[in-house]
Image (cartoon, rainbow, N blue to C red; front, top):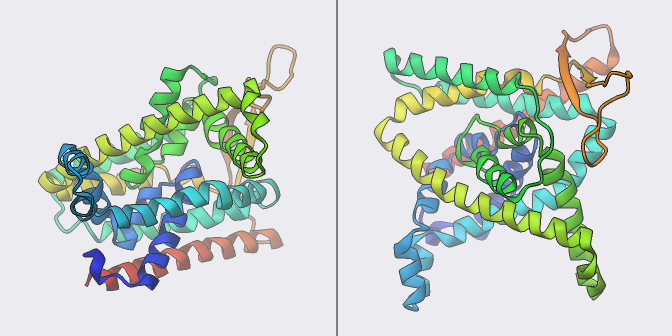
Length: 338
């Protein structure tokens, strides 16, 4: 959509979509890209990211800022990713509280998003043939492999942090594939998406209060380095995967969409609210913890909801809330596309 045709209300809603996308992208098993896909702004997002290229840089260097701005649809990207950044600092805090006190309900909310997105994306596959069926099978297999993979130990090496940045951003560019879950499997979820975010938030608050002594804290400096490297990896991954996905969507649109359907279906259980968590234990029967003291998950055991329990209905209500949220985003996005 042309930026000139967008009203202030459109940009506010775009910011809200960015918030939703960012919040979804942080939750293991949920893809932020699926929000973009279903809400109708995924093609514009990918196309805009593809234009952050050498031509864009040449226009900026030559002083043609307004032309570069229009060429890469920068205003659209700013509002969208400002919403995503806001969710990392604002909504993420609410999510952390939610997982602490209302874990099943939060998982139910995102399960509602996944179920609704699966319904909408299936209808985008208009041709069912050998290639699309193979794409679905590949997507389901990959999703299941990721879902039931054993998380690795935490690794704060900068090359691993950079790699996690590249991989983690795939949740925004590849609908159905959860970048945060991949980071969880790589063992760095708490380091990069919990502790680093909290430390960065603390640093910004201190700087806003003109407390610059925080910059001499070696722990804070270490986390700032990690955040910086993770950010660079995310930018590189965002540009790389947006170009890759832009190409495959153009050349193999139906097969790619079918693969997305498979990804969503394959990662279904990663957001299942009714599950028991079992932590790893050592030879002495003590719970194994990561380098930052968090218990290491060994496996999940899934079970069916008990309809005789009152708490089950609060989870079902949160699932319906997730359904309604995505229906609203989809209908408004479809209206704007038309």
